[in-house]
View 1 (cartoon, rainbow, N blue to C red):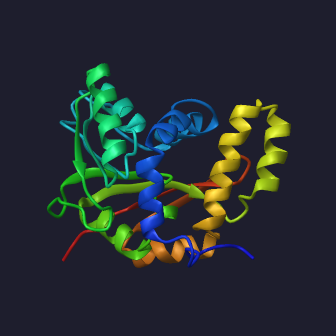
View 2: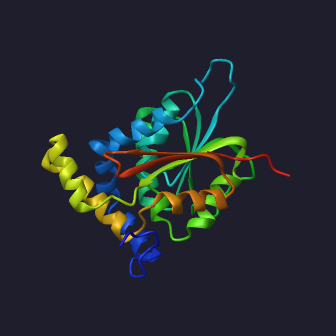
Length: 236
């Protein structure tokens, strides 16, 4: 049966502990391999205007930034990047890497369900492999919409309903992935099965309920991952 709700046994305190204790592993896991490639592909799919070409400062929020790999990439491209995560351990790693690379990212310790920013603070708001993890889906999406300006874009990548260990193994054989990269994708599929995988109808409903319009949903990684984005409407 397709998982669209968080399983009862895999609750928020366990997730917090996993990210605090496994921060180093998680940072290394996302730094290279198919997930890193997918995040670069996700960034290229966003209609971000070129920075410094008469568009003014483009403000971007990374929700659940983890070790900050995507946030640093955007900062190096000249965007004004803010990033939040609730894991102190991951933020320590993110700040260390940003300092080492001289990437200008503002990092904040924060829950994704109550972001510490005023309404309409950012031009773009995105998450990569975060929304499917959260305990309170509607609250998280509503906050992402709230802090994004009208006509701004909210976007994310999350597991499709078809993601499974069996399908990952078939994909790895087809793409001739090495054992390390295959293990990384198996870990992601296991996480998805314990949290959420989105059917198209369900994903469209929750995004519409959060207030997003002009939705675009694309399947990537052999159909196992959603790239989704939507526009924030004008506010009354």
